[in-house]
Length: 297
Ligand code: NAP
Image (cartoon, rainbow, N blue to C red):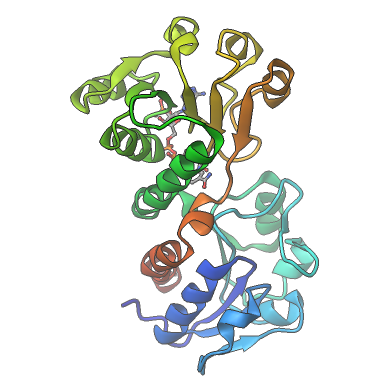
């Protein structure tokens, strides 16, 4: 277990996963202040956790702010049920000097605010251990969405996974495990070689016009527009697109709607599909990341 004794940490925003995280951070010795974490889950005997009345109180003198894996929106706001909190230079300036901000993703607005306030940034979504463990509930959640959106079984269906990174590889393996015919699109020859090794049908992005007309379900994990209008129009009208990539996804959703294709952006799957497991994953990895970054300074 990480040693966080003497550190004051502000956990801001999140869902049931952060409830578990707060518990483990407190058990690791940190003085934890939470704001915007579901209160119901924090009612237990958390001696070292206090519920702040507002964001400023939560941050005052803290060594770090910990934001959810989803980070903030493009304007730097953390989604909190009451009202969103914007990560501004003013808010960051109430932290202890030398403090850090941990967030799954860090948008340009927050980067600028941190740079102006002298706050170090740690993008937790880049952590391979966290991303690979999270890919398990993400893949299960994506398959669950596909099951709900289709009148046929995944078994025996033609599935294409776009991107064979940490999430794509897990998803492709699971789809194959339940009997789908799986194609995997990757731009690097080494990733297509890995697809072959995994008994998937490898395709490059230039192969998509020929491959897409045969697909029943397309899962996208590429955080760039890869399913553009032209490609959407070669797909079957009955096909389903589940887009896992971070907002705004990699699909031209307007063209999909125009063609009558069911296409869904699927954010926050770990928290939706398996909040308990996803909370345990956060609690296993985030305290270690915090310790490594705050103890090193
Ligand atoms: P990753 O390991 O970096 O994989 C991303 C994949 O996309 C890689 O194969 C990468 O290939 C490929 N790629 C990136 N840009 C590309 C482009 N312009 N053209 C073609 N391929 C491109 O990331 P990850 O952890 O799997 O996450 C993938 C996405 O899913 C991210 O946006 C992440 O935020 C999101 N995510 C969402 C959920 C959810 O709940 N919805 C859960 C987990 C992750 P190269 O190696 O060639 O760059």
